[in-house]
Image (cartoon, rainbow, N blue to C red; front, side, top):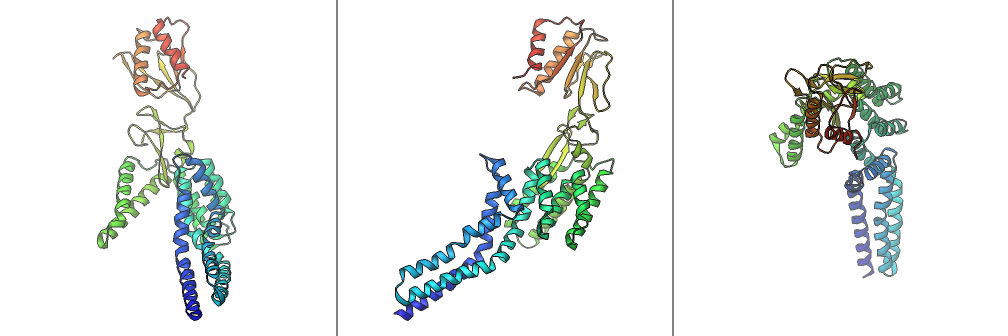
Length: 388
């Protein structure tokens, strides 16, 4: 009976150790992805902390400590419940399990780090502010581990800012050849993009994103030639979206000071996964984009105004057609010069503004001293000038 217990404990010990060895990495990656996933209740707190842990090399160690304990614990339970010689054998297996985990910890933790690093960098590019992403990638760029530095180089290359270019230029002297070459390629792509006066059109980005979402959601269920075709199309879409993003470094650096001269609105920033780009929310393109733009001043009337180079002056009233022209303004200047009915002009522009901003977005309105507007219009002006 004792011999049977010995065989049982030995077999069970080997089985537990083997299963734990193969299950560790996928389970650790799943736990890591859950920690990195933005939470609905506290999205910024959870994913930012998780990303900081991964990029500093702390999250995989925490996962290892939490997940390695069951193996020796199971062996310890065997030694507690089984009597006599079998207890001694169970204790030996528990000791061997602990030693084995300690000896292989570095290799297994590195495997988890390699699996979680791309997830952390993608999260940083997709959800992080420009300042937070830059600080975290700069910190990771000084890691002693070349795997971490390589991940930081990829993130900085996709970030595409002037600060990212400076950091990549420093990283071109990295002792690791792979990191060094990746830094050179990333710096060169940013230099080429920032020197391009005509960024690539964003008119098809929405279509590409929708196609990418559709294909990636169906990829797991495809097989054979269908799988290969979808995979190639996904790679093509990702390459095209990356080209668009990298070709508008100057615009993204100037955001939110970007303006579409054709649609007369501010450009918006769009984020999808690790891609971010700016485009006009009306036409969806950037062919008439202007940057940097600080203030946009709309005029009713033709009162002489002096504005700075970074400001834009827009006429929002067509006297000939008696038509108000909507524009996303910071300031509205109103005078009676060249306007037959200033009250009518102001009333119609405020109607246009309210249609586009039902929540009552604030607008600074400057009135000429000689204007005499009715109390209702003055009330609306007061409400817009002092929003709740």
